[in-house]
Length: 146
Image (cartoon, rainbow, N blue to C red; front, side, top):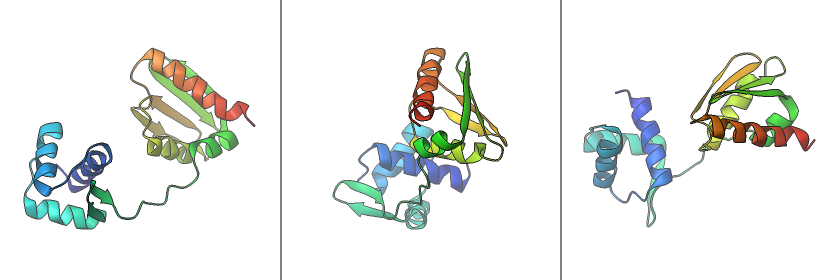
């Protein structure tokens, strides 16, 4: 288990659940992801991630720079969207696939399990074929509004 993965799971947990204490966080990490950790390690992770303890639970103190949103990037660079089963293949202008893939990943849409980007092509994995078709329409909506 590496530190980056553990910290990513911590961020995912605090965004989706009310985590009030380090004990709660340790329990959720163990129950949800099988990650066992010590209080010392959690304290260090909390500090490094810039988490703040609030009455609503842990929150990230400063949100990282998000960059342009999916609509902006897709509207500018997306050229084609195709589906194959639960996969969606996006074509962009050369050199712009990574920017769109990062924007998609940051959205944390339920339709997107993950992305892989090359120079001008992105492979988006959806949970199933029906969701992939809906995602295709959603993405085409960004292009058709221009």
